[in-house]
Length: 216
Image 1 (tube, rainbow, N blue to C red):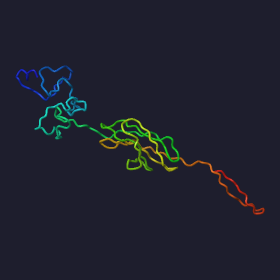
Image 2 (image 1 turned 60 degrees about the vertical axis):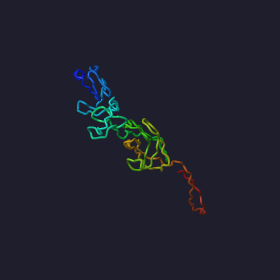
Image 3 (image 1 turned 135 degrees about the vertical axis):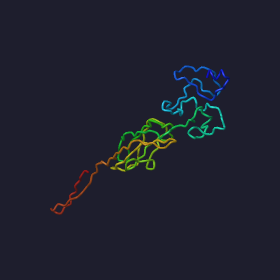
Image 4 (image 1 turned 90 degrees about the horizontal axis):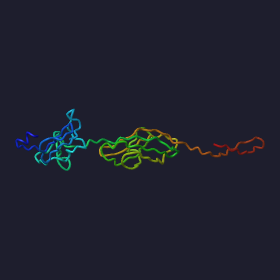
């Protein structure tokens, strides 16, 4: 940079950064990223794509003649051009979800939930529980929306059939798709209410009918 300055050259629209953290010497111009780490993905491996924290994003000069980056993707991508060979593009994936244990199991209901441990790089717009009588239910089956965002949540399942095995999974949705938690089976309870059932039996002496009560 000092040599360029002495020759009267203007070098702009670049990032100038010393790996030891020291301030670069010389003169810099508008649209230069001066003395700040460009936050490449993995420069040691030759990956000069930008992380989401890079100061290069939207910091470049508008050059209408340049319409794509080194990946062939359109640029700019966002409010302005990014400094560097590549425009930043978010790398998002479906959320990471776990399913909570099933509790409070009754004849027709139960309680479950989940934990959205990662949003996958995009806002979680919906999360909840899905269920059916076979493994790995999806939101195409019965499901309840709980809320949105990350973290843990709880859902009450109602309207189930008694003495039936169900499978539940937590789910979460973002712009990339749907993430599902692990499959958990459980079986609803049966009706254990005691009922008095009256039956009758015949006794030969006079063919008298004697009622008899049995508790079931």
